[in-house]
Length: 351
Ligand SMILES: *Cc1c(COP(=O)(O)O)cnc(C)c1O
Image (cartoon, rainbow, N blue to C red; front, side, top):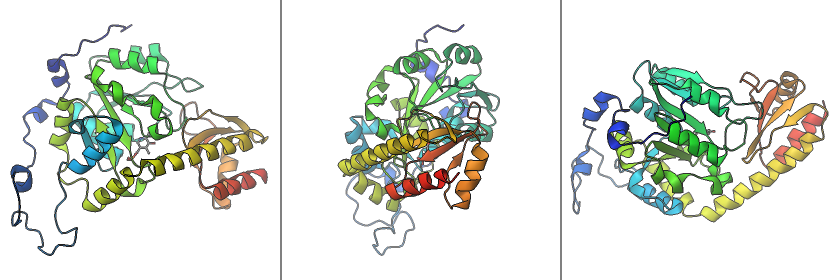
């Protein structure tokens, strides 16, 4: 049993990175190399008519990093933006995994961890969560070895909706022999549980967040990673130079300037989720509603296939999770607008 705590030195962290990337010189735009007042821009083969979108975006997303750093109380130099946190999942996997290295995750969970491992030809090692979706810590620890590079921890977890206990998280971050990525996609629903303020304590920790859920901006594709300066440097080394475009940047900056608006919508989503939970518990066709701290809930039905089809017939789409381990007969339902949720409950009462 590996209960040893790892003493992370910079050399040990460096040794986790694919060796060729340590030598790689990233693409550098002329504008990134240039410092000082720029009045005439003839360096990038752009069209000269100013439309607000004729110029390439800032490759470092500086303004966006500053705005998010300020909101999160975190050094903006230790933030990288991705084209959705999906892009970061792929990048993180490719930074640390050679073909044959191992990636660990705890299904039922977010599907992209496995896809990214497959793209990198890494071995995907799954440790199934317990029946109430807690982490079987000893079993997980017994599954890792020298090939283990990345451990994905999703808290709050999609699709189960619950958060990982803080002490369990700390224990796993301290004992995993590679990089631990804490996916905080749903942290805006429980901001007090974020580990961003503790990140400095853990040199092997990366935290990802997104503007897609609580912030309501899934359409603009904007997700962020928080990490040590070295890991941030590696993320910047492999990222495409202009991954955050000027349209996305403008919309994101505007939303980030109004956090109270987001918080109010989050509160509404949470109260609607609670209302759905109460309605669902009253129904005979429902076996269990798993406790959630997010804007969705996992529901076990007596016959999820029948419920799923009936909802589709009523033009209501929910997410089938029945194929995931320990999620037999389960559907994941997002809390929508009040009238949408009423429609869902009415459709279910017909069964
Ligand atoms: C939705 C989701 C993401 C993806 O976020 P994007 O920023 O939209 O790519 C990441 N992780 C989890 C757990 C999610 O549910």
